[in-house]
Image (cartoon, rainbow, N blue to C red; front, side):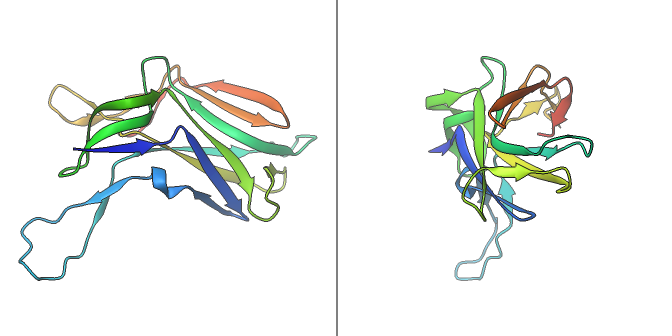
Length: 175
């Protein structure tokens, strides 16, 4: 097992329509079995992290634009989604927590063109922002992966120096 970290403070840069996150929090592994010594191996990567995608848009009837400063995803106490954890390198599975853990992941949203916070306007459409979480896996009694229930989780968006909060009510992370 190796200790790896998914940061609770991530960074997102928007460049026009293109959204880039710090990929250091997007963990993947590649494993190929039965390779002959000395042969070329084409690696196929599998994700380890869970990615939570949020799409933000401004209502076309809105009287103002929104300067998006920060986005946070907060799980209930006891549901840790970031921090240091052990990873079984052989199969890319989560195997326990290290010294730090957090039930919150947040990201500042920066506009690449200005270096300031990203401004979302009524006529800009939308922007989809990814947040990377530790490998969140739930299994049924037969060992099959199932949806993670995010009921009670909160999304907090800081925009125009105000905090907007939405509590999630449905299962919407596919493990």
